[in-house]
Image (cartoon, rainbow, N blue to C red; front, side, top):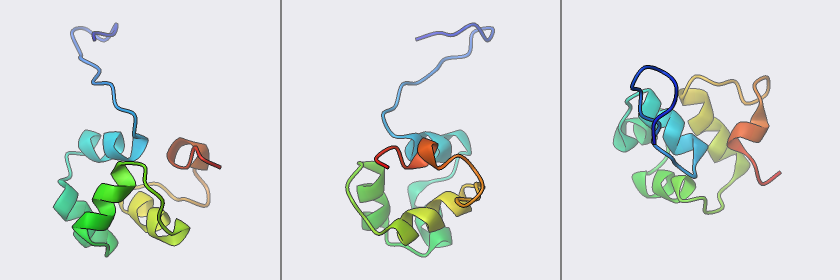
Length: 79
């Protein structure tokens, strides 16, 4: 799927958290380590499975977003 950005390819993904991680080129294991969560937990979050809100906030913060100031709808669409 191509967009108008001179040959840039947009890879469709249903999970904005995973898209942000991939855009920053951070591996799943590195993000899990930095956020202080297990790799299994991070995988579940990326699959859209439920977890504690605090856990999601820690992961989002590691990705460079302030979960209290930035648009939470982007990362927490279920709200």
